[in-house]
Length: 209
Image 1 (cartoon, rainbow, N blue to C red):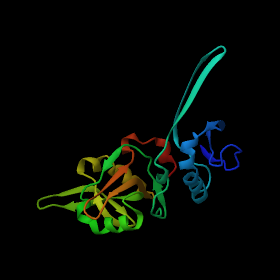
Image 2: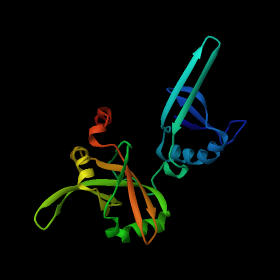
Image 3: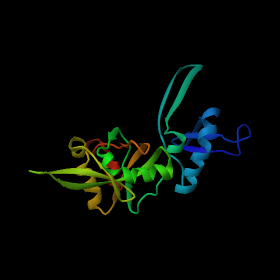
Image 4: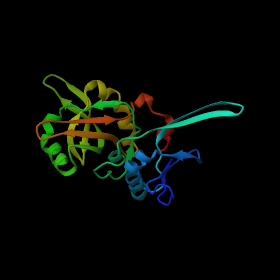
């Protein structure tokens, strides 16, 4: 848990780090200078504390002990999406990178997002199961939208890893949202998702539905 500590007498940009309620230290001064304001903005807009992934290790014997806490953080601008989360959202847990395809067919939408938010920006993307008609067959894939506008689809292979999860969330009246990053310019743009596959999802995450 990361908590901004502007009243710290040694560093007004201090960010305290807690693990299971125990105060274990602070971000290093150089990191705190970059992260203090974005973290404070997250806690202001979303309420509560900011929880991030971490690893801890400790070793010791009588009279000698060492410990370390390592955090996994996005870039300072990457805690909140540039666009608004949709009503009824269910944010899927982050995981491996998943490349969106067919972005070139939606450059009008992507260029509008790039113009509004910049050439590299985190976004909240919604996932939707659709059926695509082919000359001699149909195929079920996952469509990716931002602000209810289509920006691409997942390949059939990637779609097979998410369709069951998207349906599960949608059938319960929620909107499945994936963390995404848009990079590019008016000539070329790409969208990458960071989301866990359906088979890798912790059952406790689904229980929150």
